[in-house]
Length: 157
Image 1 (cartoon, one colour):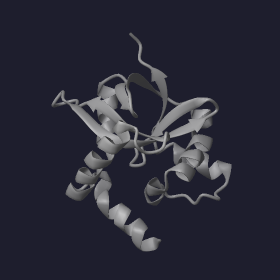
Image 2 (spheres, rainbow, N blue to C red; image 1 turned 60 degrees about the vertical axis):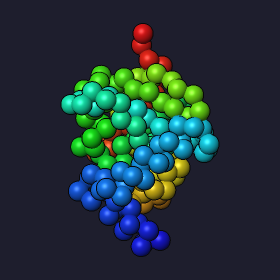
Image 3 (tube, helix red, strand yellow; image 1 turned 30 degrees about the vertical axis):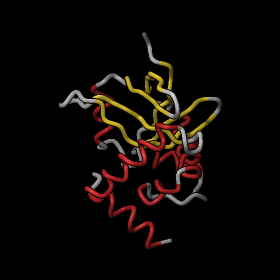
Image 4 (cartoon, rainbow, N blue to C red; image 1 turned 45 degrees about the horizontal axis):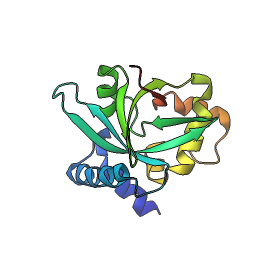
């Protein structure tokens, strides 16, 4: 398991995906977009802040108290987070069908429990978030401040 965790960290050394991670992300995003895999995964498309082109990548959706959430396992400096901020939260979610959505910052009071739920459902994210699954709620609150969490809402037209 430790070897696998090291491999996952290697894919995103320095908080950025290396070439192999980018290839894997493209392939995974395509599978997620087709709706082939479980409901908790999807492809998220956001327009690049410089290129303007739609960039797709795989995400794990977390269900919490009746809402879906997306968490940045790489923190605030992830490229998609910066693109999302430039796009005012506008994005496209695909899991079999294409849906225009708006990603809105989650309520900070819910961020700890949402992060815990996310890590339980997205094992590939665990090596990137420095907390154990059995950590206290207070520890999750402290760590969650470093990982943007967005509620998935319908797009405003």
